[in-house]
View 1: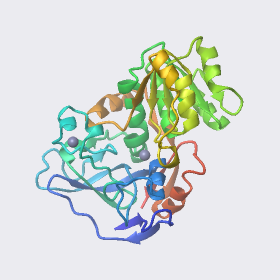
View 2: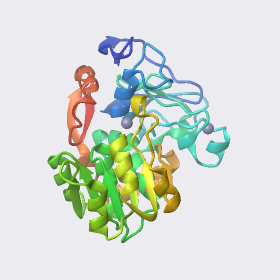
View 3: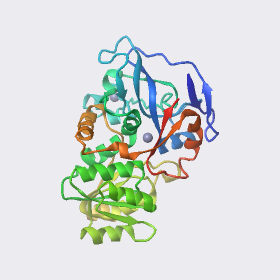
View 4: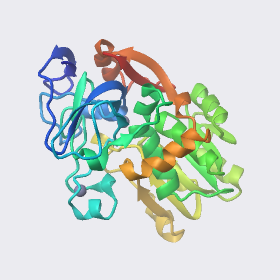
Length: 345
Ligand SMILES: [Zn+2]
Ligand SMILES: [Zn+2]
């Protein structure tokens, strides 16, 4: 199969031909129809993820069709249209048994713990636990965007943030995760404030339901949010993963508010300084959010089917596999409006 592979961290990936994968007993092989290019792939390529063994094929935001099925798989057959969370549970640890596959103790992540979907085919482990059936009406590019950014935001806003109607929700960083969070929190009835440095992204945040936006180059972000909300946000997300957005997210909260860290903080940002006096004195909750387990996709897909959520609006450029190396290398330079998705192989 054709695949985009890198042999050293920070060295340009190449389009190469490698052997096709074959399914494990409990796994499947998918023919990849669409796969997103994500900042996490860039982190992996930079060498920030200790799970990656070289040589490596990135790619974790995928949708496709079941091509081959392992002998122990009972729920899936060749031809099924599916996606998969970027964190796949093992099915046998205590977290998986409790339904928390997103923090599985022995998790697999396509494009990190094994070869991913910047390729014509990808192998997926524990298919009965981890595959998600896609509606016929959903196009593959949209479906690919669900598995990482959109599902992560859904869990962050709905399951971790427990956002409810009338609450003020601040979203710091309006890239793919942030814009997804704006849309989801607005659909849940919250009053959403979008924060970014890029006027184009702020305009899109308003289109997607933000009632106010703040350009971080022009304002004291935390103070501006306190002014708009008359006391601070109930829930705030750092959707970017940067010490500045994380700090603003914590400082913009009202007492007993919730900060949700969604953006990854790795490399030089792995140990940020947290404003602990506010955490203690105002009983602020700090919550992480990391992907979403397959069994929660139904709720999200129902909101897509009913028209309350429209992830297709967050799909940006559609590129070919041959264009993927350049897109990956530049992922940290420009955060494009809308997710770049590989749809030609
Ligand atoms: Zn991703
Ligand atoms: Zn597990």
